[in-house]
Length: 519
View 1 (cartoon, rainbow, N blue to C red):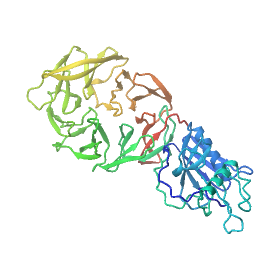
View 2 (cartoon, helix red, strand yellow; view 1 turned 120 degrees about the horizontal axis):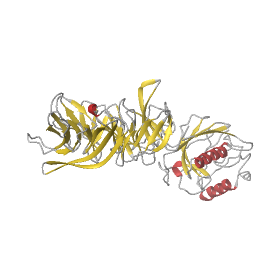
View 3 (cartoon, helix red, strand yellow; view 1 turned 90 degrees about the horizontal axis):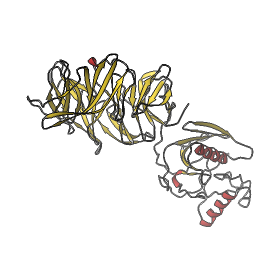
View 4 (cartoon, helix red, strand yellow; view 1 turned 60 degrees about the vertical axis):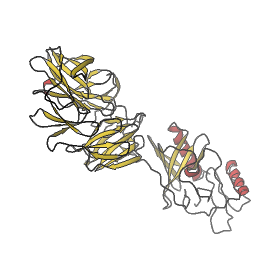
């Protein structure tokens, strides 16, 4: 069989006249006898019925799939397996009940004109695009077209539009060069999905091993090699990219438009406004780079001298009291805590001076340790077989440190606060995890030392499954045990998950898992 899918030789714009979302995308493949469609959570093959054209079947399949996705309109990528032509794009519109050319789609019916050739010509008859019937002889035999197709033919003749020359293939695109639009790269998460999502991924893209993505509004920053790419978190479509000069593995927000980036050795600053990467000023030549306290910190072993990055991208030298621990860092300021001699003191140090600001004293002689992120500090107090946890907002006023209690909780176990590690920070929300204690803006929750956080949720390892907890500590979903957890979640509940293929661990990808798509 031979037919042309499109009925106009008019030059087409590169984008449809009416905006069509790039996601979700229906992949439609046609052969002589079948049409196969694949879409998020959908895979179905349609067989050609008696007296049915392949165009009718294609339209049926695309419209049914669009409706199953809960949409009234959906972009379709069409592939004709009987020809060597490139894939082309259509739009399924359930309101119109039509499958239309993507580049000419306007939301109105009747955009096609279909013409048939008499059999006396060498070229074989065309088929109508959607719902038409084969014409056996000449121009007069149009009665086998359906009403819509006949109307298109009449419209085309009245307008004097040129007749197309039929070409090979079941679903033939026009011959003019078409600017290829971005297409998502659907994939399957190679491990169990986190609680609340299925393993279907609407898109995936390579990411540096040991790296995590960084949410920036509805975009997500992804590091691959030395390149940072901002992608649409829903579709994976690239927005812009920048050469970082380092293989980035860590991010920390400095301001709304400035982000600290690092490969574990060097720290730079990415400007989200002009998409440029800047070197930091006066970075110390030695020391351990640490992300996790808020702003990046460089510590020198066994020394009270350390350096903290300010929002402008300059390193500021700070000296904390001997025996103190870092309990937060932001914009050139370090929070330090000392809990020796049953007295807990906290300093907010914002200057390189031999004279420290006056510390604030916490009236609790059972405190075992403190840690924190930015200006939020949590202290752990032993209470027999339980642990009492208090969160403070630390500040500085007239060279006197202040600490305002924000919230408190008691958990039913002894937290090993004497060996507090650097907090694990959810860059999506600012919530953090320390020794299995999750601190959000609403609660302090014991989630266990093997918990994971991301996208404003915590994922707790229960006896037989994984529990997904919201910021209040309530369980909102459960799922099988897995090694993959969201690093971020966008406003449409698409989870951004980093996972390596077990069969090839060196290859690591970021997957976009749409909401409500189960196995």
